[in-house]
Amino acid sequence: MAKLEVNLHKLKLSNPVLTASGTFGYGEEFDDFIDVNSLGGIIVKATTSRHREGNPYPRMAETPMGMLNAVGLQNKGVDYFVEHIYPKLLKYNNCVIANVSDSTVEGYVEVAEKLNSLEHISAIELNISCPNVKEGGMAFGTSCPSATAVTRAVREVYDKTLIVKLSPNVTSIAEIALAVEAAGADAVSLINTLLGMAIDAERRKPVLSTITGGLSGPAIKPVALRMVWQVAKAVKIPVIGIGGISSAADAIEFMLAGASAIQVGTANFVDPAVTVKIIAGIKDYMQRHKIDDVNDLIGGLVL
Amino acid sequence: MKKQILDLRVLSNSRLNHNHNLLELGCADPLPAMVPGQFAEVLVEGSVSTYLRRPFSIHRYDKAANTMHLLIKSVGEGTKKIASLKPGSTLNLMLPLGNGFTITNNQEVLLVGGGCGIAPLYFLAEQLFRKGNRVSLLIGGRSAVDIMLASEYRRLGNVYITTEDGTMGEKGMVTQHPVINQADFPFSMVYCCGPDGMMKAVAHLAEGKKVDCEVSLENTMACGIGACLCCVVETHQGNQCVCTEGPVFNSKKLKGWTREIETACSLDN
Ligand SMILES: Cc1cc2nc3c(=O)[nH]c(=O)nc-3n(C[C@H](O)[C@H](O)[C@H](O)COP(=O)(O)OP(=O)(O)OC[C@H]3O[C@@H](n4cnc5c(N)ncnc54)[C@H](O)[C@@H]3O)c2cc1C
Ligand SMILES: Cc1cc2nc3c(=O)[nH]c(=O)nc-3n(C[C@H](O)[C@H](O)[C@H](O)COP(=O)(O)O)c2cc1C
Ligand code: FES
Image 1 (cartoon, rainbow over the protein chains, first blue to last red):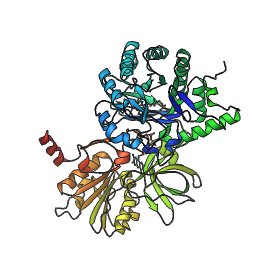
Image 2 (cartoon, rainbow over the protein chains, first blue to last red):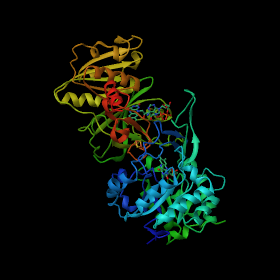
Image 3 (tube, chains in turn cyan, green):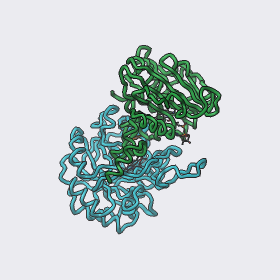
């Protein structure tokens, strides 16, 4: 029997496959297609301190092997989350992780504090890397002092596992990773979307209402893989790999580069059952390579 | 209705004009139950520029025959690939998605379709006809070649046609046709699908006649199941996903689509 359990700080995941925030709704959107409980865990869409309407339509542009989005953190705010969404998440007995975003340090702290008391939310992922909001978001994740400040402030009010999600829109992602590790992060996840742009030449107009947006999907995988490898070498805390993962082979590549777990994002849109196929594919790979414990894959790149 | 992902077989593919194809699809297993207005997300394999699925309205669904049809307008890589499928090939669909039109009973109703906007209206006309409604269908296009399937629709009700160049039916836009401008408006409900500008104009006309108008929106989508929040439309209750709250909306719900509610709202502020 292949052992698929992995640990992320205090979290025990039944397998290394998680879903990426903003691409898996609150889980229920996928109940028709898969048994959500069979995943290692789910990371639900971003929660901010206040209700946010997000950006105007159009918010999406398809690009070769990927897409740009400019959703802009549309959500009903943390109080609504606690009252109306959290109860619906209780049906999931795997690891349920909330994604926390805001535009001020106080906002992040307010959300983290309110989520701290929710027993069934076993960790938070601090999104300091959203490219789609005017203020805050990515701004926190692109300089060491601001990444440190927000991580430290949240660490003070949050007792459980604190994951910090990093932006790829920086010169040295390893430096930011080291800064948030020093500020108290228990794990890092990467990457969030890459800042990009699409133009409709016929109309001479940008496709997105916000002009620029975040690129995701298979197109970003090589960049993500490189960054995971660099960060895993630099930090001691666990690394969660994200970026264009759509098959078991992709997931295994990220683990070999040093990821303890992975998140599947945009691929969920193409095949809502892709996550369970990835888990099956990982088992298959382990059997073929006579690997009993999936942990043996982590950082197992042969140089 | 549980959403499913199915591999369907192309039973036939007929070319209706220079850029429209009608695909008949079937399956060994029973197709899920579908209602008019719902759509499917179709996978286009083998191309880097069509990574995401493409949404298409259910044009027809025949429960007894276990078949369904899609009406495809070729506009880009994905639709061209789908339109070129040979009978016997397979197509992967996620369905049924979204909510359908309101099906009235024993009423006099008007359906308005512009160009490819007639796609969801066949299934709708058929259901309305079955429920004892008197169906009138107004089809608009640029030219005679753009008017498709009129004879099929004639079996379900009265068909009226407009073309911008006057090569078929009345010359002009659908909103200029006498049937929609009758002083004594006989219809208790209007259904519309087509370009946004046309739908807005029809919604305004219906509003002037104090009749509800349901429109089917075609916002660009990434997931089709409410997971990405990319397809939103502004409603009086805030942004809503077209894929899960629509694609059919009562035009009164949509911000900027009605005169009356806009004024009422500005008074509130
Ligand atoms: C709910 C819904 C129902 C639909 N029903 C039908 C239908 O029954 N029959 C049909 O032919 N089409 C329908 N469409 C539109 C169809 O999904 C698009 O035309 C298709 O996705 C284009 O794919 P492509 O790869 O050919 O074009 P692309 O190469 O992706 O784009 C080519 C051009 O088409 C435009 N385009 C792309 N997507 C859309 C869109 N959603 N709406 C308008 N323009 C678009 C692009 O801006 C671009 O200029 C529907 C859309 C929605 C959201
Ligand atoms: C539509 C969409 C919405 C997203 N929303 C969020 C979000 O709310 N919070 C967040 O941290 N990341 C968000 N992301 C980023 C993803 O979680 C992920 O980091 C990124 O898409 C890269 O992974 P992928 O290539 O597998 O999609 C979003 C991505 C997409 C495509
Ligand atoms: S297309 Fe993803 S939410 Fe509607």
